[in-house]
View: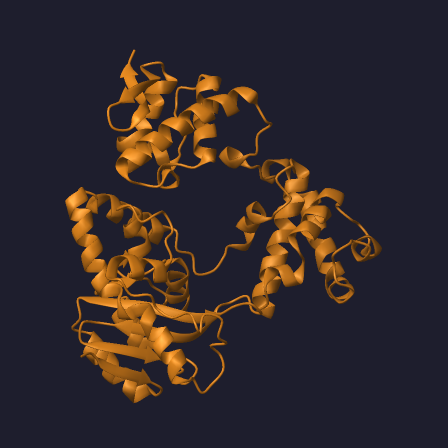
Length: 396
């Protein structure tokens, strides 16, 4: 029976940190709110080891440094779908765990699908379905009920047992190294706070912009990001993407042109029109050498030849994924396949820098896709005694 700890003061947190310090593996999850804020508001931290279960209340304990020192200090931290948890930890502690394990990532490599939810994974691996009664609770409200605490603890209660079973399946499949490679890639992408100057790439509705309009978009998107950060409100509450893209297209010069934009709240227009116009002016006046472009991520005009080749590669990809008991999306996405098709049609010497041509993915399927493009492998349909007609690859 694991000890239960509900941490609501500094002394209790220090005692918990001492207990956790000797653990080699710690399960961790967080509950946070960010619907009305830019920064995630951390409301709970749940932890588990073989000996204890704990809930830490950040709304009662203002200094979580003893906890973060343990989390980033060397123990392997186990998550399910670690992305947002890692960003929160990085933002609050200034570091990330030295080692981590993600049960969602690991499950994808042994046939559970590429993004299985936690409750479903618990059910499939352990045969227990966690409750959903508090899935939409407001974690900022206090006091917490026992049902809320139990629900929160369920998010870590089974993680260590699931990890052991997944590790066994990974060893049997010979895919432990693949998962470690994937986890390293996830950690490399952890970004506790967005870089304002990069946010133009994420603006929906802007993919058709080119040249000077992209310079304007970069400036206004960076302004919006800094404004959202300083006011701690969601960026879409400052100016919606569609309005930002329209500003980049029109490059307005007068406040009235800003105020007339559909979708911009009048109060925001009154507050921010001058700042927006200054951002537009910076984009318009930027030297030609500093005008951004989409680079390798540039959207392309539809090309029937690209569609045809990508469709063929997709069929091969799905066949390989089925034989490996993996989701094809774990191997490559449609954009990767279209990049391969354009590489072949363009006659380039250097293959594109895409995930399917790196690491375990290249070994598993990427090399075969390149050989198909080069005419070294042919695709045909042959009968399998058990499965019937199947896609096969043969040397030409």
